[in-house]
Image (cartoon, rainbow, N blue to C red; front, side, top):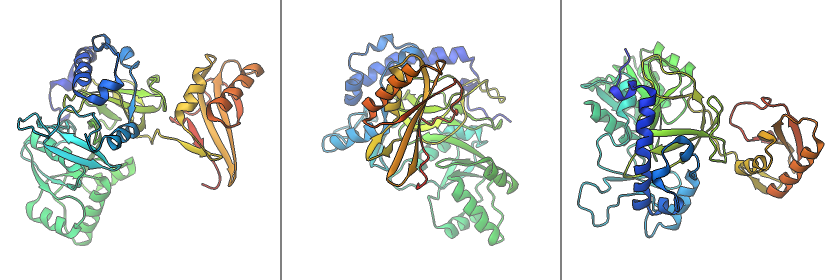
Length: 420
């Protein structure tokens, strides 16, 4: 059973793309007018001209550390760092902030009043959640938004929710035994704990379906859940933008949510990579309350070819494939992926690069491996070496390698030092 939420999921791809691109200019204009931070970041941008992915790719990427820095700088005046288009001071209308969350950093996120604000219902429907289900929600209700993301989605589907939160395993198992929920939302690790503790106590859980997030759920663990009688599905969401993508019964990657525009870019840059190539997930969210434009999540993934066998026609990503922030300290100097990208941009002969750091304690060595068709061009090699020293302030070897040689894993900086 496909468990579709609505007809948006099965639109023709060109219809979806046209709708997203039609919504983009007004969202950018709204952000420029109502978000002080984005007004500055997007200064000089004609929103009416941003009607394609190519035009979107020309806009700057805002990464989480930049959002945090702005919040820290403006905390006394605006705890959201100027990114929110809504506030609470003096507001009595429904358009204001309903809740404020704190994520590690600390970073503060606003929640508005729209139903299913984080769009989690779509992921829950794909996981088989239905109206009338009782959901045992085991994300934390303390400061962070995870529990509220899931609860709002459950309510949008017509589900009731047990606000279990985290910890207190015995008390939670007692509630499960008494109330017999059929669905679970939370981390996969806590679901495993509940199942194991229940087994030890001779208790058979009533839970038969689950939507898990917040940490990796490898196929081996998913299969273990299946053996315990629980069909577990993953979703990829963040506190900043809400749902990004979700797993379906096809078990082929994650389908991108209908309310976001996702790009995969080369780490340290805003440059989109080819479909199938691993890069950083960048999200533009069509949320007027918190209108983040080209928000760099710091997560790695890649676009999957084709469409989902369940009939969903949206793009798919492979899932979480690691972190894009590969900043590394070498001989006392920080080197980040953006610097590697800057070196590559100086030479049209280069198509891809990977900085490999090796050595032992107090003996760091680095080598830049660059893909090029000009493998015997010593002059090019020398010019690239000079660029490495100019950009990073460090000396390093340069290796010219054939195109397609470097691994497709999203790594721009590989730290292979033996003492790590």
